[in-house]
Length: 262
Image: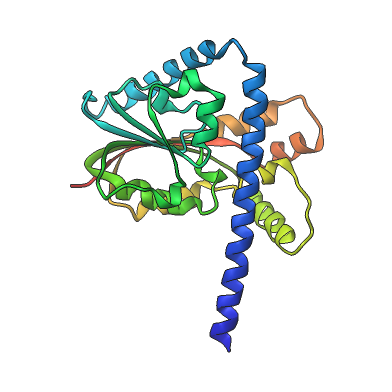
């Protein structure tokens, strides 16, 4: 009986997580549809900015080793205009659940790599398929964010390079996010943008622990916690959200460069 109850509880939790992930996707698509309409006739400007950002990341990767044109590059969560579309490599793949919709919304940006509609938790590639994997501040929109890290490392070749970023927060936001998700799962549907757009609010400790068990050599790792905390405390805005951030930092960036063992 206890085992049956546990399975029922797990099933309910999985369904609740799936609903939350689906709503995050819906909101992201709504946002990008609005953005596409506003960008009409100016998509080249975004493409240029995207190229500059991607080349900055390329330079970071090349601190470890030069990138070859033959390198197979994957971006997990390539979104509307991810790094893969500005990296200028001969074999680039961008995985995103909304890849089909984004290709229609941003055709001038998305033509420089091959978009694939899939979820990061279940990448449709064999083990050790890619020389380089990128994931730029996306996993906290997914249903099972930490499972994406397992998949990223699985498809990365031994000796391959990883560039990874995600927003991290004070632990109080992780607690608030869990409570918000639980209340929605229980039927109290209150949609707050901070929690509806992100399925989790990850902490630095959670991300560090997720990577600690991976077969990776961390080349460089940093956060903007100190800078973010100082900026939020210095803000002259005093609305409830800003006051909370003065006490508990939010949206700092975790960034990591790594190489897979082997």
